[in-house]
Amino acid sequence: MKPTAYIETSVISYLTARPSRDVVVAAYQEITREWWRDAPDRFALVASALVVAEAGAGDKDTAHSRMMALEGVALLDATLDAEELTRNLLDFGTLPRQAVDDAAHIAIAVTNGVDYLVTWNFRHIANAAMRGRIERVCRESGYEPPVICTPNELMEADRADNAD
Image 1: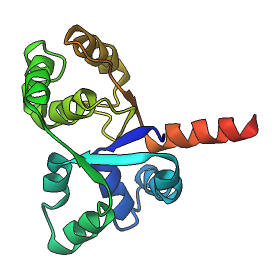
Image 2 (image 1 turned 90 degrees about the vertical axis):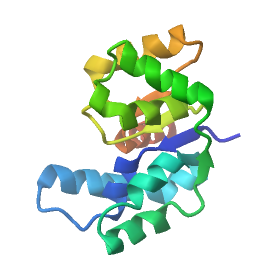
Image 3 (image 1 turned 90 degrees about the horizontal axis):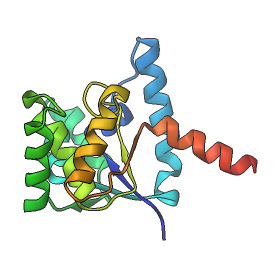
Image 4 (image 1 turned 120 degrees about the vertical axis):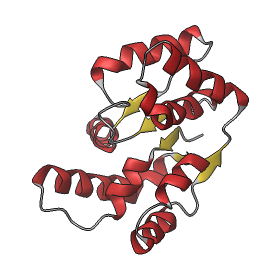
């Protein structure tokens, strides 16, 4: 059985965006495209209605590209348990109140038991300073958190596995 990977909206955005002139953003875009090529063979890709809503917002043409990228990605339910975990992540100060959608992405992934939460959101999700607090609140709420990582980190794991 393939491990599950929750695809947070930033991954879809980097995947479908026009090439950036910013060298860091351009690198993230290329890494995302490279990872995405093999991801369906290695992972059960999942997202949520929240990802669909975020991906469908904004410019009509770019939103269409994002929505096309999500075709074939299974959608997880945002259950009452996910709503409760979202509140816990916010109430315990794990994430700031204005980051409710980021907390919801984490909670949906956690309560559905995914293996990886894949994101380029360094502000509130893939943030080393916050990761321990996120994991603690998840465990105190009765859940095992997924590995929060970037596409690059999963590619690095692929390369290391293939070197053995």
